Length: 470
Image (cartoon, rainbow, N blue to C red):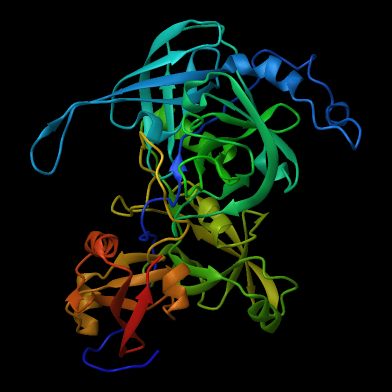
């Protein structure tokens, strides 16, 4: 980075915030639930029987016959809205999928399926149709819970996504383009995918054909267990192109439990800015692999500072669960309950140690890029526009650094990282216009052309950085 001074600055950091646009995909998928209220599956073949010979494809008929009655078609009528010009726009209709998680009518689906709805209907495979009530929805994770008034309903069985492996067969059931009870299959292509710098969801990537209308539907493993909610596809045409993404069911169930019990969702924070650990960095630090999250900054007033975390530490586990990358760390921390104690395994000075930390709460102004409801599929890009997670400068930080405004970079990926921006940098201006908050930065990046010039302060030095946007 070339430097040219005209402001003094200090690089404080922490918290979680995302820029870079909405999830870079099209949407429609699912949620799963609780327990198998109807007992063990006697008709479902063992995994070894399903797989059969090496030359045969898996037989999902047992899963379909047993669990498809618990997969529902969701119809939505949208409320009348007023556009930015004050003109009223009549509500349209949309559709999606969902699945029953309790015999008394609780159903998981995507937030983007029911967001903005004036009414929601649920149709079962036996032809019955119910008016549904939205119990709660969470834009950050794209999870929603709706309920119908019925009893003795068929339910799905909830599995553990952690036990799934890349290359394993999976199957989706849903209503693509309104074709109810459609079954598609494929394999798990990857795990822990992220499309927003502060997204708490480590998506499961598959090559299962998923299309508009599949949103909110279940993703099953060979044991007939739901391991994810189909939520997004990556597409340049609006249709399936071999890349679909599911919300891990454990993350969805964590959100569901809070929505049902309190109507809203709280998320934990520990107050660190983290970045991926490269193989070269891991080797220098004496680690056997690049698994973990490198601490690039510590909030001076956050839980991590009080717990003794330092810049340069590598977080390798949370409450005994190993961390593969930064996405997994963000997801695990988000599921921690604010005010509770947690244990972090940290690699420092060639050895691993445990630190006890009291979990903080993400503030209500921390915003994530969220999926948007789409009536018609459209082309979207697979990269964030800028690729940073940021938070505002406090008044004290602004005064201490003698800055007219700015936001602190918590994490940099994609275009921003490629341009040399790092955690701890302060973005002061975009194309010469001073930034006074996160929302302003998001708007300016969204409205920018193919590139922007960012004014960045690092360690008291100011630099002009050109970024080619995604």
